[in-house]
Length: 316
Image (tube, rainbow, N blue to C red; front, top):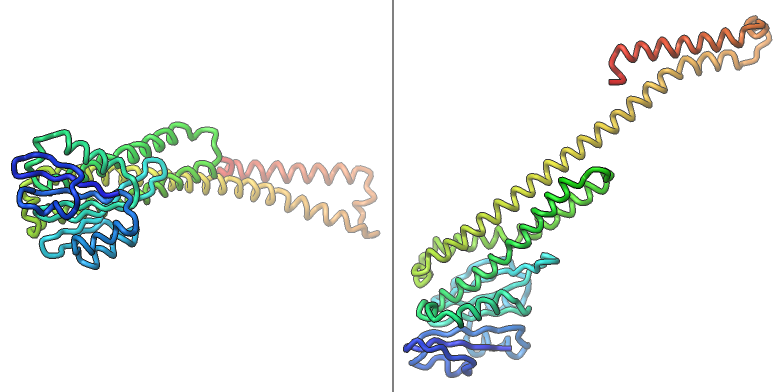
């Protein structure tokens, strides 16, 4: 589906104009949205708008990394939207020029619909130009990153307060699950942050300078999101290291206990082995109290070794 919205020189808002009528003299600027376009509609990027072939190719091959390319007075943006549940990224492409804004996306996105309605309902935005339409889209995309990041923070806090009674394997599995989600978010948010920095620093998009404060606000939001992600990631890293240390400590205790038991039983096994050889010329075998004497010696040896290990601090 292709929908159009045009602002006239007299500040009237027109909808659903054919593409051929958008370049009329009374049109100040226009916004064309390719919403889940068909293959035939997608070809209009080249046939009607004559965008650069590399930009058109990037639109057709999803999923590109967020970026900004300049093709003369047309500036090509690759942006990402994030699904709130799966954290899957969806590509949004923008073509921005002084007189038009073209948005292109293969997935139905509520962020684009929200920006479209917001622009439509506020007449104060109509005279701000196509760059302000681009701002509205970017702002909606970035604002919808916050619920996903907040959800991970809540998962982390809930996990931190509910770790008692869970096995070390369950805890580690949850930590790595959270870190995987963080990596998914970071792959979108950090490139978007760098993209907005390029927009603010670029001298090649003069009409954006008029809305510098708006785009700067988006950049601040992305900086905050990056800091939140880094904070949660550092927390998961600390917890992972603590769990590994705890697991190592438990393993060391188990090995120490087994070593003590083995060491105590070594001389006892030696004594039992000697008196289990059944040679005839062993006087002790014919002692009436020999069995009890050997058991007593073995018990005394075990007690002495236990006392010695206790003094050495092996049971601490």
